Length: 195
Ligand SMILES: Nc1nc2c(ncn2[C@@H]2O[C@H](COP(=O)(O)OP(=O)(O)OP(=O)(O)O)[C@@H](O)[C@H]2O)c(=O)[nH]1
Ligand SMILES: [Mg+2]
Image (cartoon, rainbow, N blue to C red; front, side, top):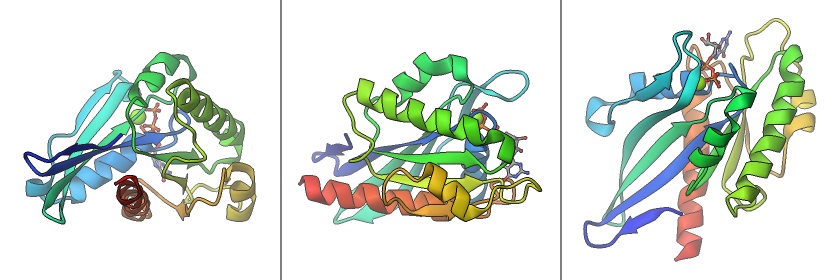
């Protein structure tokens, strides 16, 4: 649940980037960090292994202006995609307000995408959430790869509900801010509904 502090007039929302290992979640956050005005962002904190795989999570606080007099902060997290870090993924989903699923377009990763999506659904349920009701967007990353599965085919296999689908090449930044904005918009809409 978004944390609204009426005394200090702040809204804090938690967005989680989820998806299979090596899909590009950390790369999304790195691009956002690099392209954001230093006054609007905090430190990018990454807890990674020596080979740059996310070990626990990445964290990036972003301040995206004022909504009706409330300073709005988005706390961006990534989960570790590797299958055996499931306990960490479950923990990171606690209190989340929205999820961006970063899928890997390479044909060889389709099974991993599907498995990770199922894992997201299960872990949300374990936290008392329902993916059907959660603000949610789907990113098709690594569109530059030669074995990229056609967009229609990927969408058919991975689309969970009527979520927006964003094509991306996170290493060059393509589609990264579109994904973030798409998700942020849904989270803010959800906040308005809850009031
Ligand atoms: N070709 C290509 N490579 C990408 C793209 N996005 C990310 N990569 C590369 O894919 C690798 C994995 O990216 P990460 O961002 O670390 O992936 P991750 O999803 O955070 O992986 P875990 O932390 O293990 O879950 C890195 O070498 C990135 O440079 C892309 O759009 N195209
Ligand atoms: Mg990572």
